[in-house]
Length: 252
Image (cartoon, rainbow, N blue to C red; front, side):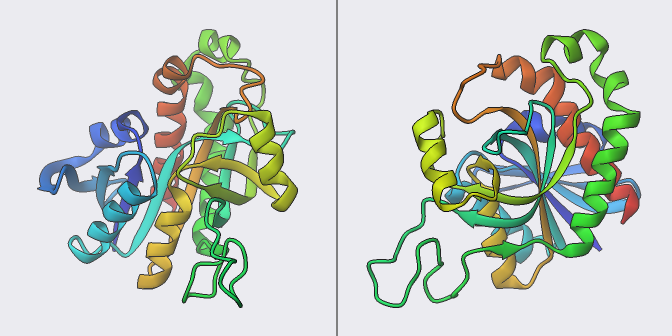
């Protein structure tokens, strides 16, 4: 079994790339795919770039060229649910494209992918279960040691939690309370928002490949409580996104 691991930013997969045993790089298009072993499992780790097109291209290459048997997407996201805090981890049980709307065509609902008849793509139940357990273990057993108390205090990380539910994706960087309210008005169960997960989910759905999306909350999508994003990504999120994946790989 070979696991494909994608991150939209280099920092989200940097520690995984560092720990990849026997790493060898293969360039396809503009991306470098790193092959090796993580926790005794064959893996391909890749930085995709932002957005649905970039992540779709990357996921397709992982499946068609490298023959991965499952796909894990790891990275950060903005919180939509009011009870989510910076440092919490969301495991995407379902993924949906919030900016997809072909409903002007009779018979197609808003958010539905034309010709597929699907709006919500369900992650593999086993991967969700294992990812949730891995995230819980990492938050309680490893996060403080990896990040350090100073950074935990700096970003107000007090007992980060793990949630499972709907993640929504779109080619928009959501940064206003008004846009958050619009999304939640139609999708009240949405936990967080990002730019890639649902596109990867669609690719995996169409190829029959199990997948799961893991997101660490980096900010509120309405920017009500601004965070030094580059610093958070470098000092906290890089450990979160990679640590949870390593725990998941060990449990497979």
